[in-house]
Image 1 (cartoon, rainbow over the protein chains, first blue to last red):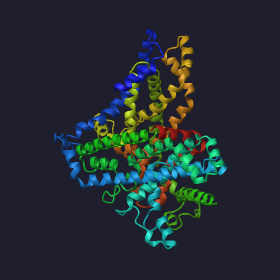
Image 2 (cartoon, each protein chain N blue to C red):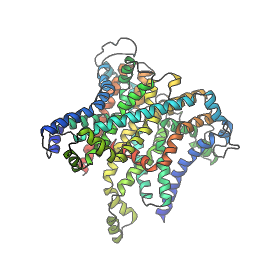
Image 3 (cartoon, chains in turn yellow, blue):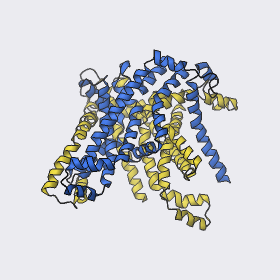
Image 4 (cartoon, one colour):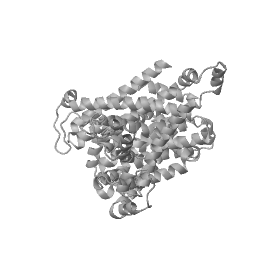
Length: 307
Length: 271
């Protein structure tokens, strides 16, 4: 907090603190009041309340009993919890790798403004505007094991062994959802990359061309280093987005079969509203908050050492 | 040569991956279920509106549509108004409070919404706000304030001080400056934020799922889950419901592409 305070003073120094300025400040703070009140009461307060619930065995209905840190101890022994944590890490990792790589690739391919590029950009971005629930319904159909188009297609070209039970098997379901997530959001990240790549000065490419650099060399020595800040943004957002994929996972499989496709956010919901273990779900929420804050801090640190 | 060929293959593959599911849904909504299952990609044998009729006559989809429209428009308008006021305050205030508030709202950005559902559920039960549309509006506003304030504050900070100062000379006070300088200048940012809010609110499942159990109050994404149960695996009916739920977004996207893309990427970059 101290750091931000001095920052604010420094930032504000050019303007003198006259009597009028102070009176204006009061009005300005008053203007933030509706937002602060609504946010504090309906968002911060319920979030902070997790701390209180997490120390109880509350079931959502009856009086809660104080149980100390039992809920936190339980996490380490709970097979479901560790499984879901593993799922979430695998899900995030898969989405992060493929979404970042594909969105960069498509951004490079569609950087020039031509009619067909503009059309493809519009098309690739299109899934972003559809609701996760709708996307889930469509992919449930495509993935349908017996009559679904994907397996019908695979069977027809003789790849029967690849025609899996995409959303019903413990081994592939999480990956099938990760594929849908990548399909869903690659266009959005591609647009972020295009904006970043457009900032790279054309002279750099011209110079590289004069030196006789191949496309791959140009990518390695110009595009990639110059696009690193954008890559940082894309990766940070993709990571957070993959932890937030509640709607998609819930609508596609509800976390099943046997929790094999559950991620932490769906587990929190199911623990509370299917198993009526609100106290334990609150502890899981606190775990996720700390996990994400640590991850964000780590990512920032890695990126800071890079520049 | 290798580059050109692989470029064409990659671009075509992803285009096909998006076009095919889209066509399957659009065509499927005009087909019977058997026809959809046996010939998912073919044009409908005859374009029949039977699914739509069934959905509107026997289902509640008209009501779901109405609920989604009410909740989304109120949520977006209220969030825009409150967050633009607050962002202006945060961007202009000279004492420490501005920074503190900014950090406070930023906290809400990284944390997934699902981590607050237990507290929200308990609070909304206590306040009798479950199974009400205004309760849903309240939580939508509260949860989208951080991202809107983040984007709008960044914008208000960019407005050069001189613009305000020349108006302050004439004795204009903060509220006047907000209304006659900041707001008109921020129209493009406000439009981008509005679109972003519109899309995430219209499409949201989590909060309706948490707060609404009454069938006549359900919004479209939540109702879609019910239709899936009701029509078992009758995908042509499900796709008809998907069409109804997606149509407003698609129409808006096609007519305001630039604002959509900038809105949804502003949310991405800053969120």
